[in-house]
Length: 384
Image 1 (tube, rainbow, N blue to C red):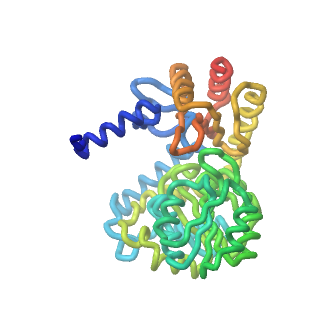
Image 2 (image 1 turned 90 degrees about the horizontal axis):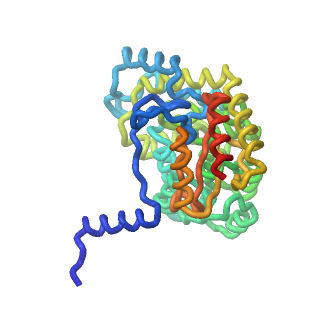
Image 3 (image 1 turned 135 degrees about the vertical axis):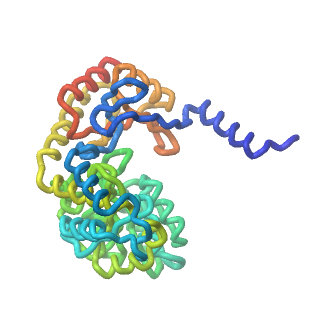
């Protein structure tokens, strides 16, 4: 039998994904991010983005970025440890740590880079990491790359986690979780997780990508749960509720100093533009000073869930802007997404392997008007 060429194998693999309704394609957006987007000459109401507070195209952020460009130029020119660490980078780290009430913070180019950098800087052979099975892929990759013993526990299963911790003889332990799960929208039980970290002498690493800006009056999951501990390592991405890009990690000063010296994804990369840090500083000020954004967002969440409570749709128990509708097959998820798009609503079907069960991942924003939500709810109820 003739062996396929490498390109033929890839083509066959793509064809298999197509047959299984699992092939993914990018869609080009012709406008700024917001509650309404332009695509293919049409305006669509956007219910699939992560711009939870409507800050991605906020005029004050645009003005701050523009002023930063005028002062600092476009490129940073070097890594942070060479000559790329400019004043807005330093100021942003201080602002973020102060907002959280933590001693220090360190910037990363993405949340993915932060998760890889932190976990691999703290763990190695002879150590152990304990991770929720629904963790984001970047956390899993950080765990694998660390070369530590990698243990996964069932979603939010504290009994299984405790059993794994109790039987571990690792010299250093780290519990890694999403504070808000990006595809289910539910919360990790952080007080109980911190108690286990205290009991079994472990770090607790929190990826709060979908909690920061939303929970705890905008200060994220630590404020929501009113938690404080030197064992906590806190990470927030900036491309969601904050409306910019990048990530910040906060914790004890000695931890941040260690990461500055050992986190490869922070050390061996060119610093992000200073103008981006300037825009992010402005976003943090808006989050702190405009609580109506979180209040409006939670009004939308309550209304959405109440309207669909008696419908045929299977909603997960999510108190956050992430409101998944579980569907039996990937084909049905795609069909429902397409039916909504025909009605001017952009909702994305999320399918395996990203999630174990197909779903529509509906996301709500403070930028949505009541009329936007009316259109979504009317269409869903009509299509059920």
